[in-house]
Image (cartoon, rainbow, N blue to C red; front, side, top):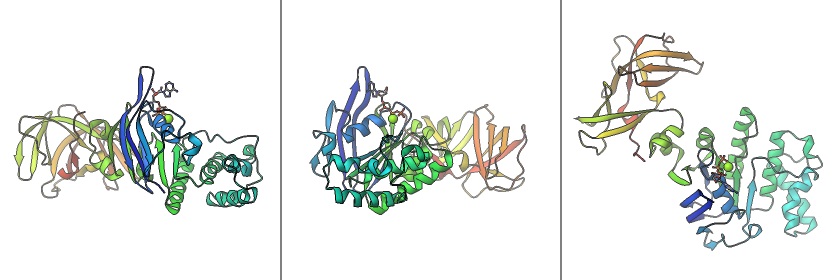
Length: 358
Ligand SMILES: Nc1ncnc2c1ncn2[C@@H]1O[C@H](COP(=O)(O)OP(=O)(O)OP(=O)(O)O)[C@@H](O)[C@H]1O
Ligand SMILES: [Mg+2]
């Protein structure tokens, strides 16, 4: 249970600036996720915290203690790798015991701690099994037990679920979150999967090309994305460009193509260019003669494609200036619209966000 402070940390590999002057404060007991596309520097930053990669500059502290100058085995972190890194020539018990043996823990204590670590990951009966006799999910559990058995201050996980099938991934992420909460341990989790990050994290740092784009709760990052990059990376969105016409009541009126949008007022003057994000699920279809809720925006779009997917219907439609608009209707009992049909759509202006241009 430890707060982690990362202060001005950088690392370059030749001409590639893998991590560029990152500062982050991770709270004691927090589940913190580094999220971003391939090559943005997530693993490099995690390896710097673990002690497997040197810093070019900056400081890392666990609580008040500076740790970036310590050797990896003195940092008291447990690390779980994407490829499990289980030793094939050791059985489950010996794999989990490995870190304790390396730390010269007394043999009698080792047996006890291995048993309780295996219990945490629901593998208490697997101690004598060999790695080749385990499923992918069980191997990942062994890797988690091996990381936890040393009672680390900070648990580091680098895409621990990416080798598992979709259903097991969802199950295991729930288990990891539950385990982290019951132990109250600080966890830093790396993934490039935005849904996984949203589901599991207290806070998320979205990274891009070695830098932080935004740090915040899942909710704030999804709803109030700070940059167009974040808005697009956090799931599907309609990123539209327009010009501010003026105010109308509490709203700003923006013209994008030939369509007027209402958005909740932000400090932007008439005449200025603006990029705004409208999530597909914020749009609703208005039936014939149906009035929108008061103050909502109304737009028209022509259907290009519609797919009924059971829980939701996905529609691609065109605004009058041919801009493509994505619509996701959840539980709205309308018939799946046909291509060419014109839809009247409404949305709550509060659901429109205005990311800063980066
Ligand atoms: N040991 C190394 N030598 C040279 N370049 C490296 C090394 N490690 C990382 N890099 C480069 O640094 C950048 C960041 O890599 P990193 O592995 O941190 O990315 P990542 O966000 O973890 O990506 P992924 O999602 O693909 O795992 C990449 O351009 C990568 O090629
Ligand atoms: Mg990586």
